[in-house]
Image (cartoon, rainbow, N blue to C red; front, side, top):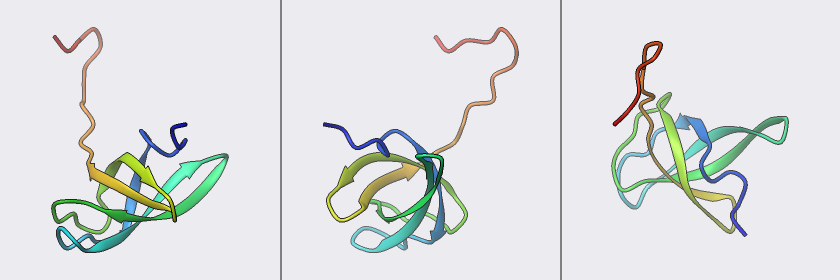
Length: 78
């Protein structure tokens, strides 16, 4: 079963300085906000928005930088 945090976005409250280092991410889930230990293969600054791509036991999540698309009315991705 997929963890419900997978696929959600969150905000890094402590930076990930590079592969093999850990940070912390806050994710809005279950009607509140929960913190998870975050890891990534690349450095990501504190305050960045990230996407949770995988969840592991012990509240550890793999994240990637998230840059939302700013589509105008009627625009679609092809």
